[in-house]
Amino acid sequence: DGGITQSPKYLFRKEGQNVTLSCEQNLNHDAMYWYRQDPGQGLRLIYYSQIVNDFQKGDIAEGYSVSREKKESFPLTVTSAQKNPTAFYLCASSNYRVPRNQPQHFGDGTRLSIL
Amino acid sequence: EDQVTQSPEALRLQEGESSSLNCSYTVSGLRGLFWYRQDPGKGPEFLFTLYSAGEEKEKERLKATLTKKESFLHITAPKPEDSATYLCAVQAHGETSGSRLTFGEGTQLTVNP
Image (cartoon, rainbow over all chains, first blue to last red; front, side, top):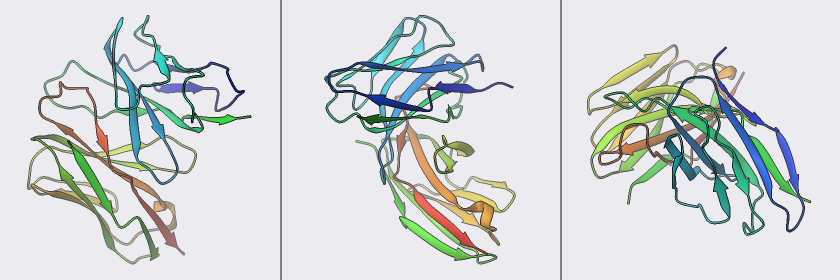
């Protein structure tokens, strides 16, 4: 079945450590997104990419980095510069090359915690 | 700056007790408004897209409506399995298709049997 796969489901980070969250989609979507969700808050956009080898900062990009080397993959690295990384991270994708908006479809998230 | 406000924050209903969730938005020209359902520990699941004032969409017990300033998600005769957090998001003109959304904080719905 087509969908978005995020891994791992749970991740723990030590102080000073970088960690990478995986996001793979087989929906043939051009655009991919990373969001952060904190308890009682809405989703906040970290980074997004509309085509391969191109990406833009969202509202809270500081302390994060991404790459988009393949259409299917959009990994997110949480660097040691991100001082409050504990959150639920959601990856999404959408069909970009259409006349009207298409909805974003989401993976089931990665929960990151600090040890 | 685009803003989305959802109310109430939490809503408890008895099974069969119909109600509505509200999504108020401020955006520099609405390109689309989206409703999602999110279960605990899961990613949001797409429900509806609304594009223009007066538009309505239905799916089972859910009906979404849109005006120039707000959207309502009406839940008719809810069942316990409708319990979830419902999220509203908007996309503004000026953003290319497939680009960024602004989300509200959600309404947590609990339906008791």
